[in-house]
Image 1 (spheres, rainbow, N blue to C red):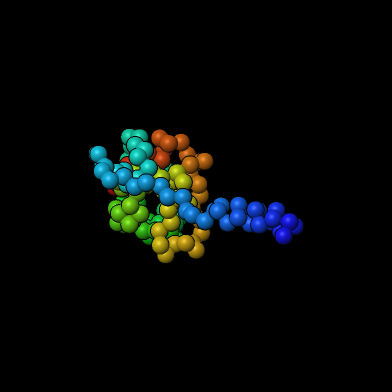
Image 2 (cartoon, rainbow, N blue to C red):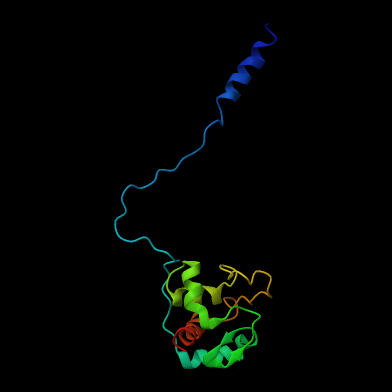
Length: 140
């Protein structure tokens, strides 16, 4: 029995550890509104400059976008950008577009998971240039 005593003590100690889950409390009342997106504001952009960037960066080689006359279907149809923003539930259309251009892997439109990945324009373009593209995409 003396030989088993140390083992029984360890067994009892281990039995009391790790049996429960850690639970975070849930707020009962929310004051104000709950943000649906990243909360980041989109810098003001220039749609005319965005139109030039759309062509020069090759966006028309992968996307449908009627104002640009582009008809490619490799990537999502940018004429449906507002619809995609609602589906993603990540804020305004402009905020969604900005984030999608800056960091394209953040949200991938269903049906395009296996498509060729979009370049990470957050490493290629400045925020102002991305804002110009967003102005073009959201205002045509």
